[in-house]
Amino acid sequence: MAKILIVEDETDIRELISYTLTFSGFEVVGASNGEEGLELAAAENFDLILLDVRMPRLTGYDACKQLRQMERTKETPIVFLSAKGQEDDMEAGIAAGADRYILKPFAPAALVEEINQVLATRSVERDV
Image (cartoon, rainbow, N blue to C red; front, top):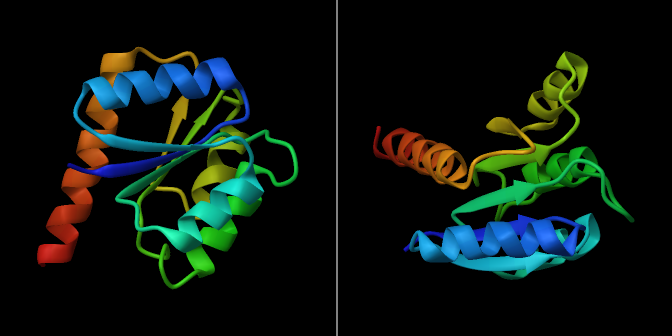
């Protein structure tokens, strides 16, 4: 069972994502801001990290950059979930180190499919 960290400041969205992923068989841990997400990522191993872009204390972009510099998380897949859908926003997310950028609103089944694709890709990369 893959363990996923959700870093999202909107409680309702974080709970919806958590419920969706738990129902799909994932172990889920939630954080309400970028700083809390970094602390959890430094303390625990995660198979994937979901990040919102706009959050208090530390933006998703900044959190992603820091996660890519940490030994524990430098290879962990990172996926942005954001309502910021301009091409510049998406390019900034990928430039910060994210593997994917998913726009809100999203269909729960589509989110699970994207996560499974990212995890499968990472697994193949590790095996090579």
